[in-house]
Image (tube, rainbow, N blue to C red; front, side, top):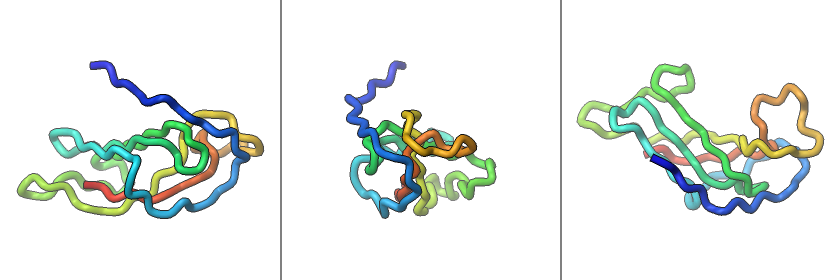
Length: 108
């Protein structure tokens, strides 16, 4: 299956760690059928670059999978820009290859 990405509108912003707050629109949150993986995709609210964050069951990131009865826990998670674009002044040892923005989304 081939995924289509929307046209990217990346803005060349300088690296700066900052909170963009809770994002309620513009992100797709999907869970795997077995509930062992959650994926959040969308455009960074700061630089506009496409970013994807994945949480897998048992990785130490707080994601515990689905509850009994098939529903996933509703929890707010922090997503960091990982757009992969070069941003001026990004530290060489920075884990995320993005602009430094982070924000919160609610998992299903």
